[in-house]
Amino acid sequence: MLQSLLAAFTGAETAVIICLAALCVTVIVLCIIMLVVTNKARRAKKVKSRPAPIIIYRTKRVAVPKQEPVIVYVKEEREEEAAVADAEPAAEEAPIELPEEPAPAEEPAPAAPVAPAAPDDSENAMRYNRSFRARLIQSDDEVKEWYSAIKNTVMAYDRVSSRISWKYESFNYRRNAVAKLFIKGKTLYLYLPLKAADYADTKYKLEDVSKISQFADTPALYKLKSERRVKYAQELLTGICEKLGSKLTDREPVDYYEPYNSDVALIKKGLVKRVIEDAKTSFIGASGYSKEQDEVTDFDSKK
Image 1 (cartoon, rainbow, N blue to C red):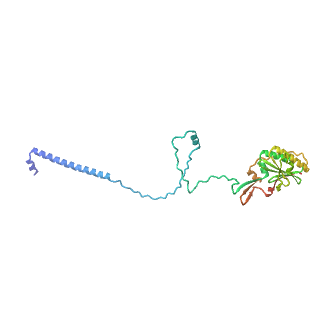
Image 2: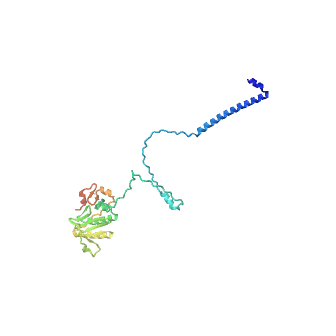
């Protein structure tokens, strides 16, 4: 049949038919290729347009210990910066204010040490009861020199004894009082067996203390505040000893100077007592101290 068809056409017609067939086949092949490329492009576009998959990771829950808040305190201004700020003019920029850190609720900061109140303002007061010797040891060197001068003047007479009790020192000729000596601050209080009225118009300014029962045998007070008064006191003591019948001896002067000691050292020696006082009770404590020492701490006599 094909041969009959080819025979029916001439050579030129046959060539045209072959070209048309080849062209049709080429077009068909190109269409197939285009379809394939178009399908691949659509598939790629669909893949890109899809949303990313959501991946869920399953984790194990772990208990985390609660941490205490860390508070950092920032010092607003150092001393060096403060000095520079005082020397230089103030900057145009405003200072940066740091936010205040809240104070911890559970652990408050330790309170600053509070200075002890004065004994008069507190209910329970610690006081130091100083003996005569303690007051002498802690007095000025000038007072110690006056004390040595007074004691050497009295002790230079025959049969004059010295007795140091807790509050004062007493001088006696046999059983007769010669003088009593107290120390209050920078003043020596000399009590004499005289009548203050008899020395009213003299250079000796004596005070009458006869109303006080403790000074019944020494009713005249003479306060020694200067070297001149010490010399006047020596004159009075010399007259008292001679009036009692005591005689002056060749006794060499003694240096009664004692170096300064603190309250702690004097407490250990039993010369200072610690006293705790309040409105109801009074407690006295002294290290190494006995009741007998409260009355007499030293005894010096001459026969």
